[in-house]
Length: 412
Ligand code: 5CA
Ligand code: ZN
Image 1 (spheres, helix red, strand yellow):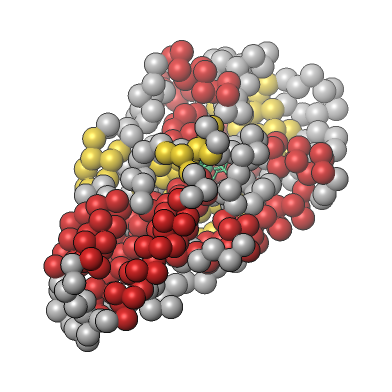
Image 2 (image 1 turned 120 degrees about the vertical axis):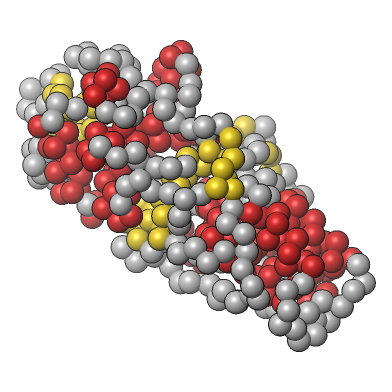
């Protein structure tokens, strides 16, 4: 699927340090083992809000730091363009589900372009890879990692579920390998985040749906396991495997995906290949608004596209989001954008005073040190602020560094 345009990325003198990154699976920060990045993409039934944007900016920062350190980057992202919440929204609003997904994916592309996010090399719609997902489900069935569950609907075939106990017993994956959660918390999150613990016929309440057989009025595709559509977690396992190869270096997304999504994607990937799914699991904090997590289902959204339409400089949106550490939960206040606009104005004036340069500067060194330490964007921003206030004349390297590492072009 088409992604979006690549922003200009100025070259910088020397090379940055390979980053250390906090890993949910180990509970500590350690160096990444390469640049193969998979980040869970949007479910396109509403426009990109600041929570999504902040998550994609965190992994954009990782990509920039990797490139600066000379690490080759391969980046894949999905779009969940068929799933229950999208189909429900399409039904409720009387819009064809494909049109809804296409229009919201288009808006996402334009938001990412405005924010100067480096696009994935592989931007994959689930509806374009249903056959590969069906083949993977068939392999899991053949190897005993998946099993059929009867549907109440006599017209429909069986649904397929992933057997977490079998995978725990017979592979290097086990329940808890990535989330490290206790059983009660797993059940709570599984129930809240799209799971169906009470479905009759399951072997373990936490077994996730792998394949949903065709139902009347729902989209379906022919596949090696019959007509139907994919469950959620398998899409990310298959896309990461087919486009990057396992183990990937980093599996990324918001902290709401730690369980069950990333745990189960990892389980499917390992059951399919025998390999670990990822060397690193990185999660961003949740952005709140009006006291609650910003979410499409609650409707408390601040949309990137609406701010841009109101005339807000996208660089200010980017700066406001990067002002928070990617791992912290934080709340957006409407005034935040004004402080960021003032800062962009001040930094841009500072940039106009730049003299030509080609040597590494104190600011470049400070930015590299901050960002390679678990993507510490607040410290990086404080370093730019200090330089802009210092009265010292910047060089073009300083201005390029803000652009290449923080994605903020102060010359435009
Ligand atoms: N399509 C699935 C992933 S396969 C999905 O979770 N889609 S989403 O549209 O709900 O979320 C897209 C990304 O934004 C995910 O990484 C999610 O963790 C992140 N996200 C969602 N809400 C927030 C929020 N309030 N703050 C930060 N990140 C968020
Ligand atoms: Zn995903």
